[in-house]
Amino acid sequence: MTDREALRHVQDRIRALGPLDDFAMAAATARLDALTKPPGSLGRLEALVVQLAGITGDPHATFDRRTIVVAAADHGVAGQGVSAYPADVTPQMVANFLAGGAAINALAALVRADVTVVDAGVARPIPDVGTPVARLVSVPIRAGTDDMTGGPAMSRDEALRAVGIGLMVGSTVVADGAELIGVGEMGIGNTTAASAVTAAMTGLPAERVTGRGTGIDDEGHARKIDVVSRALGRHHPAPADPIHVLAAVGGFEIGVLVGVLLGGVAARVPVILDGFITGAAALIAAALAPGTERRCIAAHRSVEPGHAVLLERLGLRPLLELDLRLGEGTGAALAMGLVDAGIAIRDGMATFDSAGVSGPAGVPDPGRR
Image (cartoon, rainbow, N blue to C red; front, side, top):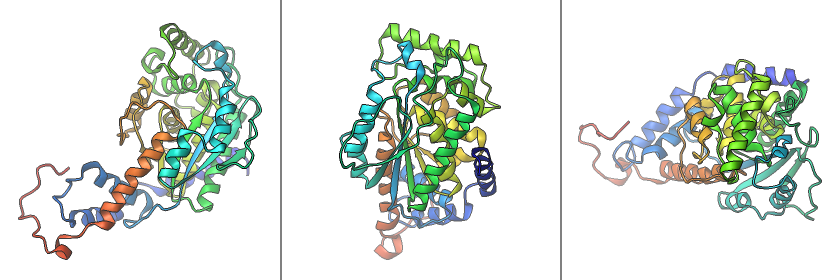
């Protein structure tokens, strides 16, 4: 099956899913309302449980098997001075993920999640770490994208290849038993690509969606906005053709994340988005397969201005707001802790009947949504 055929297949599967499962959501709501608390009093934890039921079609779903997929690649646009860190950091951090020394490793261990790292186009050799603690999927398209200000970041075939790799990775982690998927990324220069993707998909100007990424100064920020503006002016990527957007101004890791999202959604596995870059991938995925966004969970809202914009466009309300801006899937891991909390409430609390506690006296709870 070609990458194009694989994409069409998953698009058809997502289309066939239709809306979230109303029956499962009603059953989950009934269970929560029977517990010893005012209905809706645990707020968005309850809403999360209901959403998970709607995505999976199972009001009693558990999520013991978790995987966080971290896609990594380099960006030619990094040569424009848009990051506070050199491109050497990408392979060094991939090695750190594999060795177990990164923030994502610590947080993934906390929430009992495996880490799968995908080398989609890291430009330099990844240092050897001996026996890795995370799984590496090495499928580099080539050694980083081209500079988007001089030409397209990648060809259309390469963009489809990146999505196809993501579909393969998503299918593999589902086949291995993953019941919950988190997504993250690594790649020096990728907030520039995500800013350009967000601007292209929303029609907003570069200055509205471009932030400071790794912490660049005012001069660097102005240069970054100019880079995004020039790339958009050169390619004129239109949201009606999301593969062209990806090819013109995206990144190999963003394309892989698009495929992972689509593959997880098609399998009715909840997918937790991390930050800005994974959100940019979700914009493209939702344009390719409308309804994908309903089956994704936004872990947090970062300090990147484009992140708030794209979450609003996707209609997703983030679970957390902690001023995170690391990436790697760290926000997704934290959100898995909230999934644990919601499931603990659903399965661990007594009902009014079982506890012998008097239920509501028929007066509607004014705080219930």
